[in-house]
Length: 218
Image (spheres, rainbow, N blue to C red):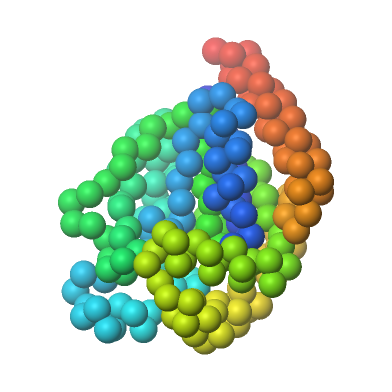
């Protein structure tokens, strides 16, 4: 971590594991936090037809503009704000001209399924957390989310899960769990609660230690 820069916390895990829920909980319980979703960095596909966009394998590393996410995290660590693109799941493309300004807060939480797959990205993350949930739980959560929030039919969710989501999880997401500093189990409420308490306490201590070291160098 750059002296005086944000503490970057990466939250990875399978689709439907509870990454966003954990990121939001950290934001509510820790001081001065911003959240970045890896989903915002899906490659811009406005140049493709809608049918071509639909055929994209959104669970493969090549679907993301990794270089832009690396650039933005580097900028934030250096104390500079960035403009995060806005991705529209209905059109499978970025909203032209739309962006969300993210400032270099004390803690930056970035969440996404493939955070730990790209080496250049891993190097920018100070604390790597993997949210772990069984396949059936993840599928049910994904089904509920995609139908309620992303306008998908149940049939579309099942087809995508069987064609790409499951195989990409096994090929990329699950192996990345071994790279995590902490695994948060999220099948049962009690286990999740205990792991979250441990994580919050650790991050509070890490952030305080970082600030004291920075002040000592001034």
